[in-house]
Every structure is written in C-alpha cells, then in structure tokens.
Image 1 (cartoon, rainbow, N blue to C red):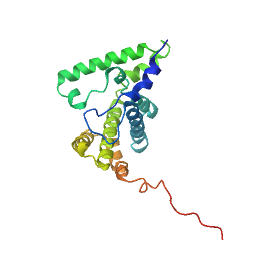
Image 2: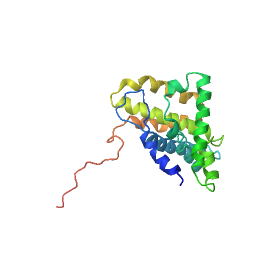
Image 3: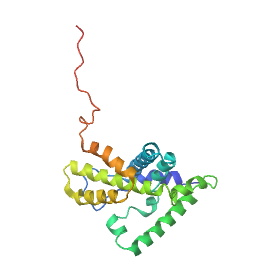
Image 4: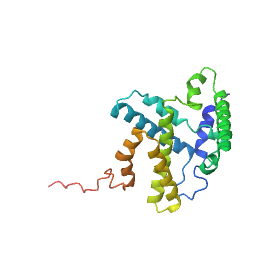
Amino acid sequence: MENFYALIARMKNIDRWALMRSVTRENVQEHSHMVAVLAHALAVIRRDVFGLDCDVNAAAAAALFHDAGEILTGDLPTPIKYRNPDIMTAYRQVEAEAAEKLLAMLPEALRPAYEPLLAEPDPELKPLVKAADKLSAYIKCIEERRAGNDEFLQAEQKTLDALRGYGLPEVDYFLEHFIPAFELTLDELGTMDYREPELNK
C-alpha cells in the first residue's frame, strides 16, 4: 500500500503563520497552490517578456511540491527557521529526510518523476520558486493589512524588501504590473456588473 497521495492530501491540515493572529487562516495546501500559480507566472514572464528559455510547467510543478515535506515536519515559523546557521542547517537536514521518506512511499516506477520535485528543484528554477514563495507571503500580508489586521505590517515590509533584493527582473515586473491589483476591492477588479438589465419596451 502506497501512502504518498493520501499524505499529500493532508497538507490542508497544516496551518501557516502559527505565531501570527490572522483574519483568514491559511494552510499549506492553499499556500502551495498559490506558490505554483506565482512560479508559473514568473516563469512565463521570464520566457515571454524577457525572452529567456524557461520550462514553465516544471516551475509550477516544483512550486506545487515545495512544502510537501511539511506534512512530516510541520511548518516551522520563519523567525525560528532562520535564527542562526546551525538551525538552518539542521532544518535542511530534516527537510531532506522528510523528502526521502515521502519518495519511498511511491512505487519505484514513479519515483524518478517525483524526486526532483521533492528534493532540490532545477538550479535554474530554484530562484523562481523561492521568489514565488516569498510573493505568496507578501500577498498574504497585503490581504491581512487590508482586512484591518496590523499584525502583518512588519512582515509585509520585510518581505517586500527581500523581494526587491533578489535582483530578479521577473519579480520586479510582477511587483510593478500585478501587485497593485491586490489592493483593490472585488468591484474595483471589474469582475462584477451590477447594471440592471434593460426592460423590453
């Protein structure tokens, strides 16, 4: 009996932002979906705006599974995870062992397809996945601020500074062209039309 997919389905049971008071709770499954959307977007921008070779589907897949190991490890709060090099090194070891354990839950025939998704992604895609992960966190901070929650204000500024510090033109493009829309209401996004239908005369 292979347990891999049943465990993947449990990503929805792992909450993120455990130390923060959130207006809207976010779980790892929701986060992973958004990171996949954003990594795909950054890869498309790299390919179609800047004219560089990029496998957009591989970027999306790598992002979709980037936190899969947290099914076994849980979501360690960022201030602890990056507190010092020793903790970072130890946590990376834990992540690697979790990835190996998940991989072992697949039939041998499927393992080669999932190994690069559960372990380190392609070196060319890794920066995009990391940036997409940070973009997802930034968007979460914006949403919480707009909901009247000042708990995320410092995290929002630090996350934006980190994104600008990556030096990735794809990220700068996304920040300029797409992030402003996350400040809009549903009506302002233009998805709803409340005009009354004209009556037949």
